[in-house]
Each structure stands twice: as structure tokens, then as C-alpha cells.
Amino acid sequence: MALVEHTLRPVTRHLVPLVYYHRSYSLYPIMMRILVVLNPVAGRTQVESVKRALHQYFYGHQSIQLELYETTGKEVVADIVNEAIDGGIGGVFAAGGDGTVSAVADALAETGIPLGIIPTGTTNVLAQELGIPLNIDKACRLLAGPTTTRSIDTLQQGDRHFVLSVGIGLSALAIEGTSREGKRRFGPLAYIWSILNTVAGVQPHVFTIVSDGRKRKIRAADVLLANVSTITGPLRWGPHIKPDDGRIDICVMRAKNILDVVGVGLDIVVPGRPRKNRNLVYWQAFHTVLVFGEEPLLVQGDGESLGRMPLEVVLAPKSVQVFVGSQEGNGRRSLRLPLLSNNL
Image 1: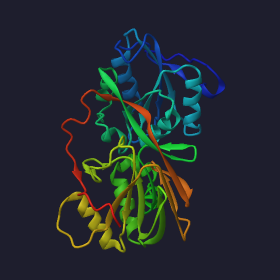
Image 2: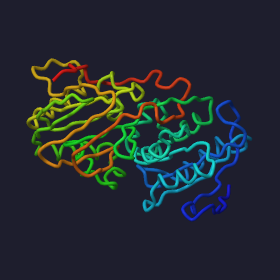
Image 3: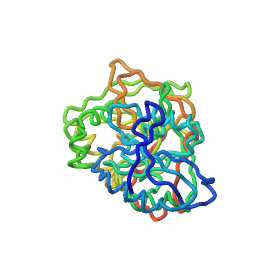
């Protein structure tokens, strides 16, 4: 099917009608317009495969019009989404990796406009967390219905909303050390290699963490404010972490050396194994978390470098609506870290 240039305003000059009609069901009113934000360089994306799947599952049904925007890496995705919202868009599909999904979710936060995920990235953490198929065709079939929406929390830092996590220390260093080319060539192994390179010189730092007004001081290698339990594949943090539980889960890795970090890795791979020391501790906040320390350490949010400490995060409960299957997550098998004490 030919793609015809469709100019709206200068910022959306790359927006084109892609396919015109979608199967009609209760969530979609007649002729709802949906923006598809496609990242052509996410993971190992096959752009034509995405377009082919969209055509297969959405063409020829009289309910929804899809419009495609292919990112270039030079634009601000939130600007594209915000202008589409001003133009009356009824939903947005993010076809890309975690970075693309996060950028679209940020723009949609607290608007009530739903997000659809077509995962084409390296790890696709939010898709895994919500039980959305990682296969392009199956993800498009899910969006073609029947489906429903799930309201998830976000972690708000300044005017940005993050759906996965915000981290300081080891996680931020590992993400900074992972190149786009490495992710495209080696997939999730690129992150593992970066972590191994990073932990070789791991050093604990003194953090002061103020959660809902309660102050704690701790020496740790990493502080992660988590919104989801998924790490990658079947590997997950504790089962108490959910994206719609109305809280910020604070994960503190109290590793002092590389052996401690390896021990935490073994706890993930072999949950429940006997061990003398607990190097990973959880507790929760329901409103605000402030983290600062003696050194201006790197901060990451949803895999993006955010500069350096101090860091303040506010919970935005149920601020993003995501299209999910009616039986999301059924049969999903996972390995999880055993629940640890909530007390330091």
C-alpha cells in the first residue's frame, strides 16, 4: 500500500497516513485517529515488517485511522505526540524499544489517552511486564482486539515521567557504557557485558535517602527506584513490585566488592539459594523519594542518562493507560528475587 505525504504542521512534516481502518469494538469510537511512532533503529527493527503487520491487522476495517511517524533521532518525541494530541489524536502506538515507549508514555502521562506497544527493541521491559507479546505480528493482533487498558503508575522527576525505573550508581554506569550498536548486534547481552565491565571497579558510596519524610543513610553500590519487577527475560526483582501498586519500590544494593555483586546476580538466577548476607534490601515510598550524597553520581531514567545527583522522584499513580490483552500475563513464567526485609 502506498504511503502518501500528509503535511500537518512543520513539526509533523514526516507524519503520513499509513492504514485507514481498524476493526470496530467498544474501546474505539468511529474513526478514532491513532498515531504510530516508529523508531526505525530500535533493537533489530525491520521497518517493513512493522508496516506489513500494521497493514495486515488494521487495513480494511471501519473504525480507526492510523498515521505513521518515523523518528530520526533529531526530534523530541514528546513534541510530536503533544502536537498530535492537540490535533485530536485518540491514542498512540509506540513501535520501538524501551526508550521509544518511555518517551511516548511521558507525553501521554495524565492525559487519559492510551498507549499501545509494538515491541521492537533490545529488552522491551514494559511489554514483558504487562504480558504484551514480543512478536511484532502478535503485538499488532493484540492491539486489533479484543483488548482493554491497564492504568500504570509513573515516576515523575521534574516534568518527566518514567515507567520503568530511575537508578543511581552501578545501573547508571552500566547503561552509559552500553552503545546503540552493541544493543543492535548483541541484544540483552550488551547490557550484561557492560555490567561485567562496570562491576570490576565497583565501589560503594554513602547515600542519604528521604522517603516520604523518613531519612536513612546507607552505603551502597546502587540505588534503584523501581516501578516494574522485570529485569529482562525471566529475570525479575521481587514479586511485590508492580507497575500499578501505587508506590515507589526502593531497591538498595549493598555490595562492597565484585563478589557481592556476583552474589546478587546468583540470587536473581537461583532464587531462594542459601546465603549468609543479604546484599539487596527493599522498602517502599508512597509519595516522594529524595536521594543525595557526598558525590554527584550519575542518574538514569528508563535507560536514559539524566545527569547527576541529587535526585527527587514523585509518584504519579495510574497516570498512563496502556492497551493490554484481555488475558495479560497468563502463563508467564519468571524467576524472582526472594522477598527481603523492608527494613535496613
